[in-house]
Image (cartoon, one colour):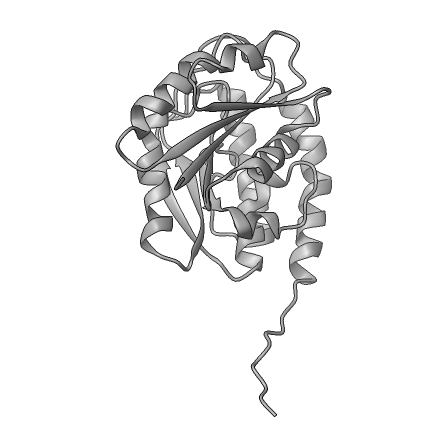
Length: 234
């Protein structure tokens, strides 16, 4: 197993089956892979809809715990050393996955590859809110990433599991990986409109939690371990 694809999903029964089939079609012949769908407390049968292929594994949170918790559960269950994530609403086209993952196979110093959306197919208010949030985050954290809200990310499983877990951590992965000494790569990815249903979050919800999280991550960066051990033979 070379690659685990983790999909956090809440109430995406109308989108998830199509998304899973697309992932399968785009990764066949690339590397051996598995697909893990984490049903985050859905009430519409998302988990059942996800089991359209024999190699798809479905995990379920009985109660919704949020996207970061769903990603974390999926990574914990992953069998491969390399993990990639994408949103369950279908807005992240799976055709981007091979290019997203490749830098991790090419360079052992790269810990995270962050997708950067081009031509976003979101509402104007959502794009403006995201642009403002990314500008403030980039100014405070100096993570060198213009679009941390993109669900398309690829990373080393072991490095991810060493990060401090907190709700909404998925929005700060570039800063957290950089904190631990990893190189960050960026890949432009495409974006498309949601297939069905509606977003689970509003701009106001993101803004309110983002303020607290931003200061918390800035604190974590300042408190990072600086010392590196050297071998000592008596």
